[in-house]
Image 1 (cartoon, one colour):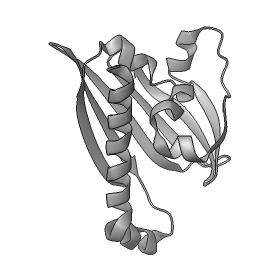
Image 2: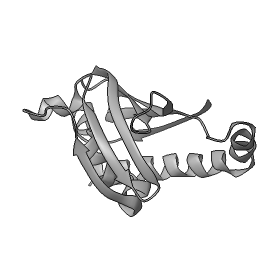
Image 3: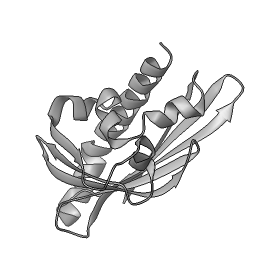
Length: 153
């Protein structure tokens, strides 16, 4: 799997950053989701707002590029969240995102660790090295910029 790590200092408390990590809030700060999202629905029970952040919370996302199932696998409120993205009906993880929130003097140090695997075996690995990694790095940077902009208003 390819790995990308991006960080930004955000002038907002970890609690405010945490609120933006629910699956249904991602389109607000993820440009790819803004452009390609057809639908997003939680597939796990959501009775309270906190249920969106719990381990086991799941969502089905229909994008222009395809359909994906997300599942939270680690959740430490206001500190860390990890989720996996899979193709529906498979057990194969396409990507794993981990968000780390560290309280700092005037806000939050926010770090995104993103692991992904290109399809198509050897061809996918070649494409990843050729251009996909740079594209994904730019995407992650734009996401951080947008998240920071929203939270610092």
